Amino acid sequence: MAHGLSVPLSCLLVFVAWTIALVLALTVVRLRHLRCGGSVRDFGVPDDRRWSAA
Image (cartoon, rainbow, N blue to C red; front, side):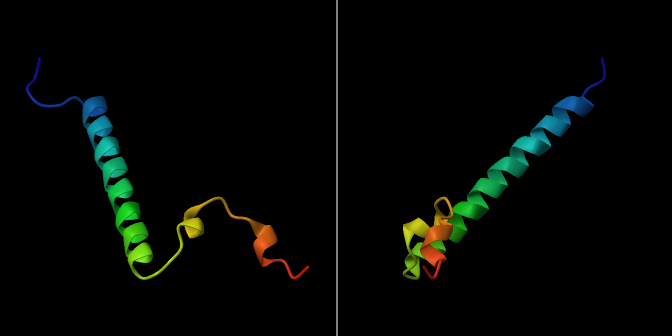
């Protein structure tokens, strides 16, 4: 057996690293938004009824 990672294992590691990077990036964006006075509700489920004129 050759040394190193197999292709499926390396793909799995890339996927895990990408997922962690995405979660960290979204967390940074959310914390910046909250620090600038944004609301926590901005990141919830979109409620189209809030924006209707009726």
